[in-house]
Image (tube, rainbow, N blue to C red; front, side):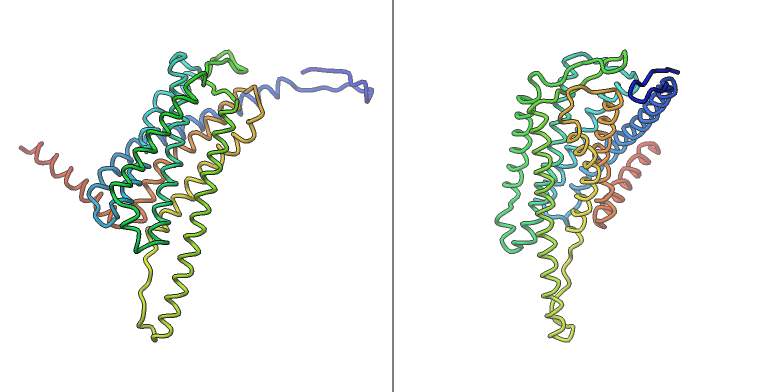
Length: 328
C-alpha cells in the first residue's frame, strides 16, 4: 500500500501497488501457460502431420503436378519452421535464453525466413490457382512442372539469402527485460518496418487475387445457369470449384492466425523498449502463426477426398508392413 499527496486536489491518494503487482504477475503467468500449451501443441501437430502430407502428396494423382509442387513447398516450410521452434521453445520453460548469442541470431533469422517463405508459398499457390481458373486452356503451357520447380527453388534461395544478409547481421540480441532473466529479442529498426510492410503487401495481394477468382467463378456460374436454362437443363456442366474453395479456406485460416502478429508488429513498431508481458505477447502471436502449419494439413484432408483415401492407403500399407515384420 502506497500513500501519496495530490497537490492539484489537495487530498491523499492511496494506491494498492502490491495488488497491482500481484495482478500483473498472475496475468504474466496465465499468458506464459497459454503460450507454452499452444506452442507445444503446434509443434507436435506440425511435426506429426506435415511429413504425412508430403508422403501423401506423392501418392495422389488427381491433383495437378504443378499445384502439388507449390503445396509441397508450403508444407515443407511449415515443417522446417516447427523443427526450428523446438530449440527456441526452450526459452519458454527455462524462462530465459540459454543458447547463447549466436543461436539467438540464428533464431531471429529462421523466424523471418520460414514465416516469410510460408506467406510467399501461399502467394505462389494462390497465383497458380488464379492462372488455372482465369486461363484454363493456357494453364498447361504457362505453368509447367519445370517452371514451377524453378519458381519454388528460386524463391527459397532468394528469401534465404535476403534473410541471412539483412537479419543475420546485427539482428537479434540477448537482452534483459523487466525481469532478472535474459531473452532473445529482435531489434526494432528499418528491417522491422520492412518486414511488416512486405507482410501486409503479400496478404493484401492474396486477397486481391482471390477477389478476382471469386468474380470469375461467379461469372462462370451465371453463364452456366443461363446455358442450362436455354437448353432446358441439358446444356453445360457444373464447375468443380472444390479445390479453389479449399485454397480459399486455407488462406482464411492463415490470415486469421497471422492477423495478431501483424497487429502486434504494427503497435510495437515505435516502441524501442519491451516488457516481459510484451515479449510473451510476441511469442503468443508466433505460436498462432506456427499453428497455421497444421491447420493447412487438416484442411487439405477434410476438403480433398483423394488425399483422405491416399492417407488411409498409406497408413494401411504401413500397418500391414509392421504386422508382417512382427509376425515373421
